[in-house]
Length: 263
Image 1: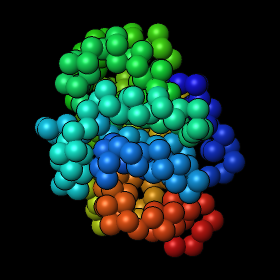
Image 2: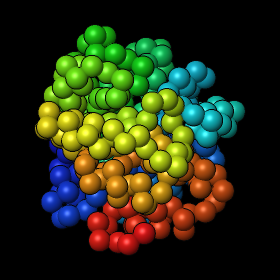
Image 3: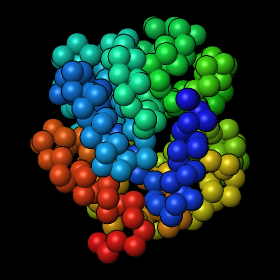
Image 4: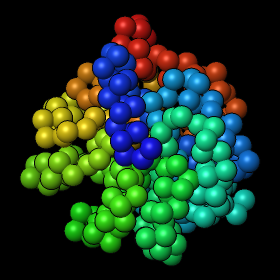
């Protein structure tokens, strides 16, 4: 349970020769009543873990696709407390690690100590807070540690090497390498410097390094996994779910995780 479960699951996948693949979905997009079914589908399709976004009115790291998904979720009344309650209701039915991606404001309103405890009770294994810098993480980090919740760090190419090394050392579960300059959203290609960036992060990190932002197809996933350990795919997954094209999601996960697949 918690941090150990996330790290053990990812390491076992790595040791078996698979590229790691973490799909992102927006909680409440399509209705919270569909959350269990969607997580179960992603688990059955071969996802390594699931990143679950909490809808927020000012999502500074998100591009248009995820912003729109957040708006749809908010229009259905989705809140952090509702998501945690829903996750708790089927925690025993799932084995795949679940990571919450939330901005800090909902945590602050909920209460950092109460949030960490509720995450544990809901079976959440890790947390990503994109707008909380290193210098202010003490507000929540101690509570997450007490409840064995992995605190996953984001590392961006625009940060100085010294700061990147510190982020890599601190990250738990995995290190989220932001592989583009800008917000989330599908890209047709990545900057040629990304491979070196991922290799540098791996040299400092004790946990897997996953590339996120802009990954939209298996070719990109496999290419980025050569220097890192796998990928996080958000906008493409959110878009395909909204379209109801689950088969395309299943194929994307399978093609991206198998290192010997020709795409």
